[in-house]
Image (cartoon, rainbow, N blue to C red; front, side):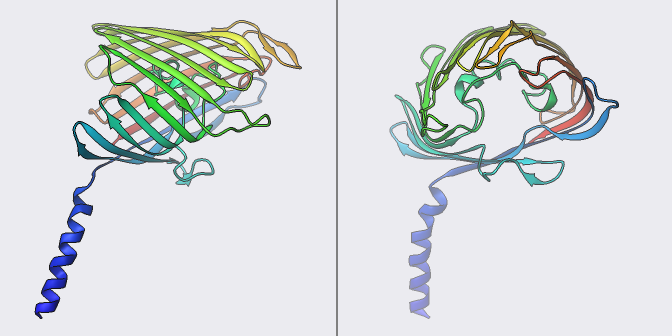
Length: 315
């Protein structure tokens, strides 16, 4: 009896640090819409249910003292309309571990979208968080999605409103080049600025972004220049008006002529989106939208138009 009590006490002592070592947060998003979609030239519209980047994640930290923390994040993307895994990797959206200090934060592991995209094109895509068929199809970064595996990421602490990022990863592609992403944020009151540089081999994209809060109104946009296998400029302007739980959105973007290596030129493309969100709570909204892409030469997605309604819940 005494021996059993002693062993139980020892086990409890050893187990206690394991329970206390990390503060873990479970979070996620389910976002599904019903849409009517039609490609240019198709004989009829296609009604479909679309998942808009649903996910579940776990993020945690351990206080190491002296302002230092051990951190981790694992995030899984799935199709909420079918329950299936998105992509080939279960933790494909992110699986990183790192250290956060007063000198900045270092993370190692797998990253989904790089910070050059987050600081620019993603930052001003307010309609449905740059997901689904309302996503910005005219932004094209070489490491835009799923390319920063075996990566190293560093960001500075907040320096009077400025935060800088540098990210790289394992070489990939036919030429086995290492990816590189640089990003910067600057926030000062109602003004928010960003910049990104995304490179892989000869493909490079440089982007600047700005947005400004005008009370109930928000305006913003970005300008991007791509060189390499695709050479073109693209821009996007966005506006939002908030009235209580209501949000009204307008987005418009376009390109100049697109030069595609070995294939010649493609005509200009443009995309327009109008959206309405009604926030039932801080976590749940219903929404409606219409979007059209004009891309006659198919340099991006081809010409299509789409409208739909959906529900998004964050947890």
